[in-house]
Amino acid sequence: MNTMKKSLRIAVILSAFLALYSCNPIEDDSRSASMLLVDNVLGTDAEGKSGNYLQSDVVLSSGTIKADTATATLRAETLDPDPLLGTSPYNDLVVTRYLVSYTRTDGRNVPGVDVPYPFEGSMSTVVKAGSTASVSFIIVREVAKLEPPLLRLVDLGAEVVLACTAKVEFYGHDTTNRTVKATGYLTIYFANYADEEAQPPT
Image (cartoon, rainbow, N blue to C red):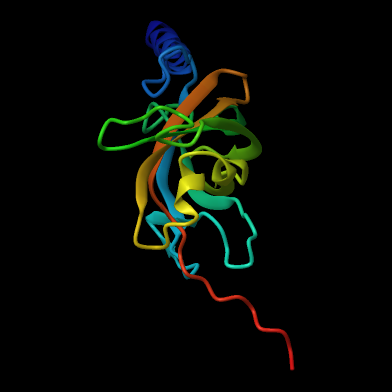
């Protein structure tokens, strides 16, 4: 009986050890027991309604340049779907930064010529194991609308649309500082969309 209890105790410890040091398939150099997932990335249309794409106005009728934001739903899961010892705060994830880059389906992807330049942003979001967190972030910077290729769209009206795919890479770590990474995508349609300026009160 004592031998059986000892063997069971060793098996439990070994399982916990393996779960803790399993490699996260989402990030090859991670040794985290948790993985970060992107459930969705949402933008807005020209009227401000939420959707699975973004219509980015390169300039407002007032001449104002505005950055575009998107919202991502991030999820943290343990690699073991049914951990023997359950989850703990060590399985929670902290997302600290993101990287946005752009591509086109026609293969013309030179930054500053065919697509906007990539950029990196910071954030601080905790995603608890087994839960989701919604984060808003800038996906198109103001400066991108002052540079090619978006600058060339200003005088072309809403009929000329540049379609790009934004790749958003989220980086973070678990509470034992083991790295995690996840990637999401959002289609963006750039144009000089018609917009209505707010009328002054009468």
